[in-house]
Length: 375
Image (cartoon, rainbow, N blue to C red):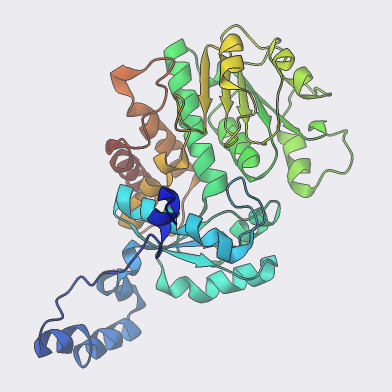
């Protein structure tokens, strides 16, 4: 096939490579038998030595069940593998972290948790990826409680970290603080829930969350447990109605829904409005329309300014956590990671430059240093 995309993917995007020579009998006796037995016996006597004498301390499992892949939905484990390979390649390319794609042919939360726990001794961290909501919340929560290595659902927390970094950049440009901001989030899936929580932790004045049925509030029926919790912690003034009602007077719109928000709904936003329309490939608000209603516009796409991309966060977060030997990725680590990303913009801060480029080599290093210090 002549398509350049398919040519690039032929044979996969990953390989393993030995870090020791295998050119002589002496090499073989050290790397494999009989020398390897001495290392195995030492680890059997002291499990902590696996960090020093295997690749575990620099190895992450990128785990999916294929139920919520990119914008493609439930396409299954085999079809998800190219995405997981790509994620693993980003780990290595941006932060020097080795990563292995693990695509599970199970979807029941009990089975996913059991599978990840079974392979965990081989890894220093678990990156959960493209697992549908609300199952992803239970799976991550249980694994965090039951494993002694970092577990991080990037669709939730990586997205939230970069959104917070973008908000920091935008507010620095405008000379405002999080406490000055009312934010509206369109979408109550994995990313929307995590963004809500991190914005509240960062001190945002009010967060209003909308799903396909409108504003989430305590009086609504048929709320699942996650949305019921959102109803208790958000929407401080008890708004009801649809997205247009939520946006009246709002300062920040964050789209993580894949829906469409029309221009008329944006007309009620504040004078210094910010719109982060992150659905791919089609943002919730067309960027041209967004620019008519907002001072600062960001998307998830690479062909527009201010790309909000998880690659700004996850490589450095895992690099820092692994280097620190952390048992978990904490809320504090996420907050400092967002600050570190925003700081990388420096003197280049502008309406079309609120976050650094995903290709900026300084970002992963800065995030890793901040996370390690917070660990």
